[in-house]
Amino acid sequence: MRPLIAPSILNADFARLADEMAAVTDAADGADWLHVDVMDAHFVPNLTLGLPVVESLLKATSVPLDCHLMIEEPDRWAPGYAEAGAHNVTVHAEAAADPVALAKDLRAAGARAGLSIKPDTPLEPWVEVLRHYDTLLVMSVEPGFGGQSFMPEVLDKVRTARRLVDTGHLTLLVEIDGGINADTVEQAAEAGVDCFVAGSAVYGADDPGRAVAALRDRVRA
Ligand code: DX5
Ligand code: ZN
Image 1: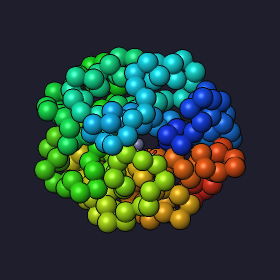
Image 2: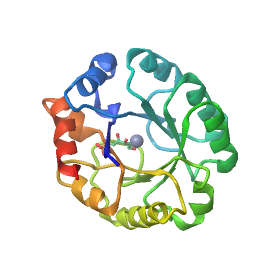
Image 3: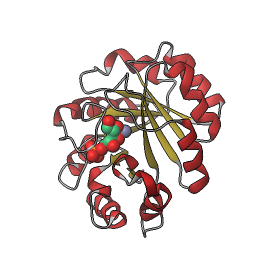
Image 4: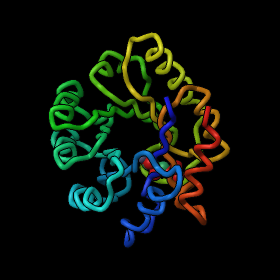
């Protein structure tokens, strides 16, 4: 499939979010999804934005929103993002109380269901649960902050997930998040990633739209 590029607005100017989103979606060969990092200062040591902001972002763009919920109690809060119209809602395996029921709730509300695992969380215990999900988000940094260095050791989990998808055991997109830039994106692609999140590599660039196109050029088959 065509690789998906999902710029993370975490590194954008929060006072100008609509313009910042347009900078990567209106460009030629622009963003496929917009990645929105929701942090609650409990699951991760940082605080970003929540459902009211996501509702406004949904009105400001027609590009699918990929909401990455780094929050406690996702069983309680995540369905609201799906009901609001987020395209993909990802919760953390480490935080969900009943991830199978939660995936069903997210899908029933019209969203794709995503499950994320932190760098130290193994994949194997989650494989059966992942049968109920549409996206696996492999974290390649500790969640909480943009601009950290890529952890290549997580690529073993990507390779395993790729094999499970290619052999028909799972049907999902493999997404990677953290430290993706022009230097690291190719190794992630070779390991089998379908969807690439990039924050600082896009919004730290002089021309975010061109930064998206540059990442895409590196992973184009
Ligand atoms: C980190 C977030 C990422 C972050 C990525 O916890 O989940 O989406 O924005 O930023 P970079 O690409 O700078 O690592
Ligand atoms: Zn993220």
